[in-house]
Image (tube, rainbow, N blue to C red):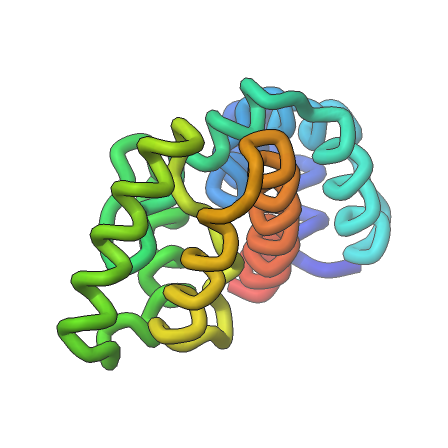
Length: 169
């Protein structure tokens, strides 16, 4: 068994919850994961995370989204230190983006939030600033219900990547 997973299975509830909240800021999701302990393998953890995420609702999704900085920014108001560190890594390609791309991302983020009422969420790992801007511009044409589902799927992908990071740190 993975050493981090084994330690998490044995940890007190507060410590276990904190670890899950770094991977996804939805408290109900994190509590559901803690309640499933012990989890026997990395594969079971991944599957359990997806099952728990599929039971979440709009309020949970919005809580998770609020823990992410806007694309091109560095900090989110409700994020843990670990989540903030991971967000910086995930968005590291924006540090190399041209000023025009960063300005367009800032304007697009504002338009997105005004239109949908939540932060633009994209699984930024491996994407350039230009790619994230193109995705943002495409998604600005969606209806709110469609966009909410897309953002929830992006959050699920981010959660899975972060679980993987957590298991090896």
